[in-house]
Amino acid sequence: MTGEAEAFEFPILLGDVGGTNARFAVVSDARSGMGAPQIVQTAEFRTIDDAIRTAVLERLGVTARSAVIAVAGPVDGDAIALTNCPWVVRPREMSRSTGIADIVVLNDFEAQALAVLALGEDSLEKIGGDEPVPNAARVVLGPGTGLGVAGLVHSRGIWIPVPGEGGHMDIGPRSRRDVDIFAHLEPIEGRISGEQILCGRGLVNAYRAVAAADGKVPRLTGPAAITGAALDGSDEIAAEALSFFVTCLGRTAGDVALVFKSRGGVFLSGGIAQKIVPALKAGNFRAAFNDKAPHSAMMATIPVYVITDALGALAGLAAYACSPERFGVETEGRRWRR
Image (cartoon, rainbow, N blue to C red):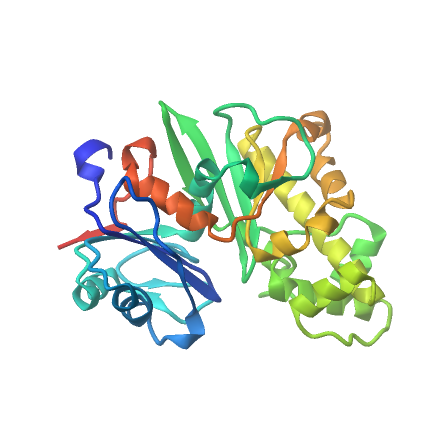
């Protein structure tokens, strides 16, 4: 998977497609870097092909030869359904409709993992821990439309992103107050997974559960309103819901860090993490992250960062597209050429 066999022909279209927003950019050549991003709402276009043609290629007047696209969902087969978006990615049809001859489709959190290597300190906000251990494993978690999780491991001189669906792991209560709240959380097929709490709709779920646990009537309906009211102190239910959210995120991030022994760092991506940095620094996130006996001492040394660059995934894709030999990205069954 190295050298000429993996090289992409320029210009290269990059795409980071989430449940709500899709971000695109074009790399003209290896020296020029990534061009200006084009950001669209997925609901505004019937298909991803329409979005690429109209919002990117025609607007920029570019004919792309290759594409590296990251999507929010598992990449399996020639029709790739997104987890939280009605778009279905069909690379063969995309090639015909856009003229792009070489298309690679990755999981969106593979792109987030690649971004960890492409971003500098000015794009990161540290949430405790020591300095990262060079070449040690790293993990990325992103509460957004859903909850994305990926690992990044270094072996034989290259970095290997490890995608997965860790956002659907079970999550349970630990304190007596947790038990009260969990009793009112809306489950999915009879269980509480990470995504039932640690995403936008999950925050709403938590807010309603906190209110129900105390016999109160919730007055807020959306994640942005809940976050805002929690941070400005105008709603006690929202404040507890966000604190509960942050604690659960700390526990889940700590669990994933244990799986990978990620002494290279844990990275929180996405708009929600960027908006709640003050809450993440309040202390309960780090306490929950560290509370992993018998490994609490090791956990306390692992640095945690918030990725503050909203275009970080595109930067990661650009790094891979320009120098694929640096990365152990598996493309079998995920690369379509004509």
